[in-house]
Length: 508
Ligand code: NDP
Image (cartoon, rainbow, N blue to C red; front, side):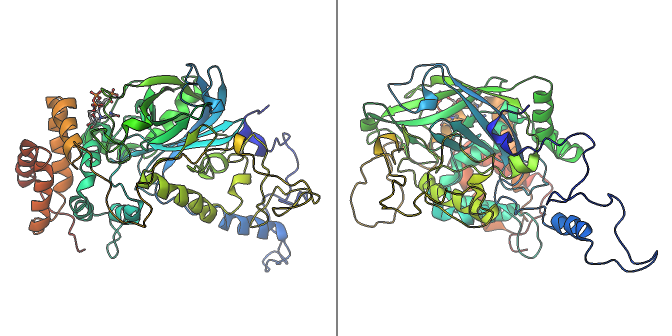
């Protein structure tokens, strides 16, 4: 018997039940289509043949762009600590257990690409709470390449395949990165050991964005989410990963599936970094800049509870491919922040799901909430649920239709907009904000000598694919790393020049 919310769509077919069409009509044969005479034509009215072929042609939905390659599992989140001083969100009250879904993914590769390419990993979570779905579209890194959503399509284009050759192109990636110095921290992370997790079980997850939490008294704090793996951090070196790419493109998917099937359930402890709102303005780093972390020495991790994945999907397509995560699934007690990437994603995520799956994607069992839906949305492709005809279809109405109740609603998260004129510009730098400062700390203070050497080799290996005739680009690359640490810049240059070079021309 299935009990998970996402299983509401499972058909429990009796063994040896007669095959039917999708309309429930028993079919005449599983193996032979109708024809006129032994060698004759096939009649168009063999609707079972037509249904099989036509439905097969429509088995795909557009793959995600990005985050196409991934998989996931169901589980439970248990809040084990009292954080009611920070949030009134029901799922984060001590003792509450919430069913949930996690999806892990690479970013740039297509649906069939190897799991073990160097790339950030998506860490998307859906909590089926009593107060509506709460989604966190996180990554396995606490930071990102850019801090303004207007650059996101450009960034992804630089990572994908090039016009003409149809190849991914390292020169294009370095061109974008070196002309976007805010990427330095994330590229340092990406080229370091954590750029290729050994498995999804062996990596942390982060909200990356700053969110707001609101307690029952209306007191607000800024927060960042850290899901710390209980399996320990493990990584693949570049050489190990390249071997895996060829051996088993689905290595991470298989690892998660097999471990859950064998009862070896992976878990992560959720911790929060919590910043009182009035400390944000003078914090040494801009707390809403997605390319920066908050030092854990300033804002130590505070434990909330544990997420355990304990159940494999029964349909990869229905429950993982069609799973739709969006920051717009937000619950009472949690709000947004001025992080411009977060505010851009609030539009972009539901929009891609409406395109990829359809306007009614939230009616699919894996996406629909446990709590009642009392909305005024109606019709559109594949509408499955509908309001009783006695229910009002518009607001205001005189027949007791749904009415907003601010006391039960989420809070956008209030903050000071610092002016009211329409404005375009970069985030305001705080005392220690430069594009390189935290990358320098990561390189000099967090990595040890061996990790630093692997970082240098990984960067040099990646850069070596650039054609040596691209001298301006190569000089920009060396300057990019020299700005993090002069020794790093010099090491990258020496290693690139000593390598076999040049498979990716910028203009090909
Ligand atoms: P801390 O010494 O308190 O924390 C260092 C952090 O770095 C830990 O979270 C650690 O994760 C993580 N880490 C260790 N090795 C690597 C690696 N090879 N690649 C990426 N991360 C690694 O210092 P601060 O909080 O003051 O941060 C110092 C620097 O650490 C930052 O500039 C940032 O680059 C990096 N960092 C900071 C995080 C944060 O949220 N503050 C989170 C992760 C990295 P673990 O505990 O799992 O070993």
